[in-house]
Image: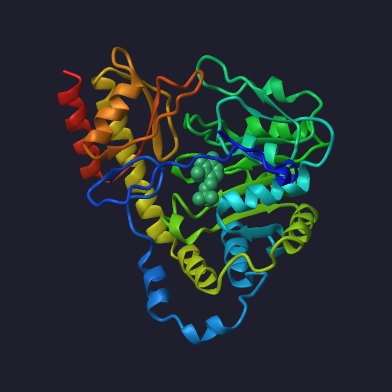
Amino acid sequence: MEISMSWEKNVRRVEPYVAGEQPKREGVIKLNTNECPYPPSPKVKEVLRQMNCEKLRLYPDMDAQKLVDALADYYHVRPEQVFVGVGSDDVLAMAFMTFFYGDKPILFPDITYSFYDVWAELLRIPYRTCALDEEFCIRKEDYFVPNGGIVIPNPNAPTGVLEDVSFFEEIIAANPDSVVIVDEAYVDFGGESTIPLTEKYDNLLVVQTFSKSRAMAGARIGFAIGNEKLIGYLKDVKFSFNSYTMNMPVIEMGTAAVLDDAYFKEIVGKIVKTREWTKKQLKRLGFSLADSKANFLFATHEKVFAKDIFLALKENNIYVRHWNKERIGNYLRITIGTDEQMEKLVAFLEDYLQ
Ligand code: PMP
């Protein structure tokens, strides 16, 4: 019997976000959390090798200036336009706290990154979801209504569907009274970034991460680029919450990763090539796929239930992602791994679906 404690009425109760499983055992082909199958740049390894641990005595640079400057340089913006945090989850949570403070509901797609409604609930932000069309595309007219803010991933997750910059420009231009957050966690795998629009629109915040295309999910680095005033407000909230979010080794490692552009382009190129190969194979095996431009595919099979495929794969040490959710319950999200991993996946499915 559950006994309700008297102090429980003072507790902030929330339904937490459920992340993809991180298996403890070895030998799993892990295609369930959109990590990069390749290691980070060798320059990152070098930084760790040469790290002066003596410096850990001191607090890190709370502005993470070195990393901010490297990002500003890379994206051709001023350092005052860059904000960094502990993964894009941290950056997005801070942005929700800072910019979604009105009475009107914020808007995001019904099928999207499942942290958005969790943060909205946690922070007591009113929200409304806008249904994607049958093709899993965003209907931009849904965002031409009064609102307290907008957040949309591009490409969207878990569908992988990409919209072009002009599509977002229309949404941003139509909403001068709210902040529009474009979550570009996967944009490097074939999309065009909206970062250049930050020069023209002061209500745009673009968020990106080192977790996917820069192969550094374990380091936890995310960043946002926007108008200086917007970034200033974001920093005010961050410094009121936790000044020292980025640790010293991570600031150094992140900077080294940004500077190694050749390596970044090489691994992104490999993943895109493997993605296109995997798309063809899955279609051949009877799957329908959204045309993903991310480092994952979103697939449904014409005859076999996604849940059954998910369980069969898991039993054979191949982990993909499945949600028991309306509209997407019969889909699997499959992260693009190495060629060898995807060949094993296809070989298993070939056998299983016979
Ligand atoms: N946005 C989207 C759309 C994502 O899928 C993810 C990964 N779960 C994130 C943000 C957060 O990634 P991270 O915190 O690792 O940067």
